[in-house]
Amino acid sequence: PSHDKDLLIELAENENVDTRRGIAYNNNTPPEALEILAKDPDEQIRKGIAQNVSTSPETLDFLAKHPDSDDSIKYTIIQNPNTSIKTLEHLITDRSAYTRSLARQLLKRKGLMEAIIMEKVLWKLLKRID
Image (tube, rainbow, N blue to C red; front, side, top):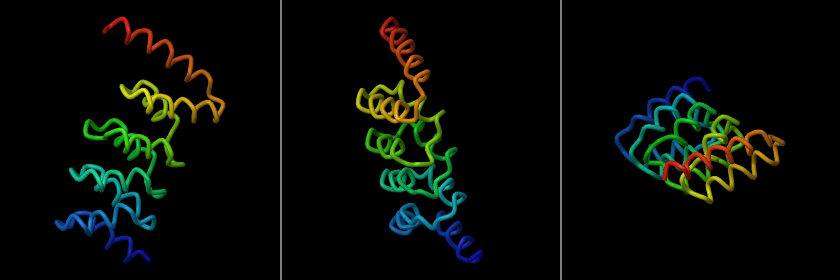
């Protein structure tokens, strides 16, 4: 088992994109390997990490804030059970109305209305800046 973990971490830096994609989508991949892959330029790899239940909250937060993370990656992050409240609070200020809505719905389900109030205040501030 430890050998498998070490191998998956090593394969996360493999030059073959299909190998790295396979590692990203494998739920047995250790969080350390997924953290390495989070910096990968391949969008499919980042999407695999976003849906992987082994991805740490910190890596999901990194992906949520990554400039190359598109809406589909952010939607997937919102659905990952490891996504932190901090990340959801960040996503309720996203430029995408759909991303904001999904993050807000999940926060509501978790009973975190104060985050919704914060989002409304920030939204009003953003409108003033535009």
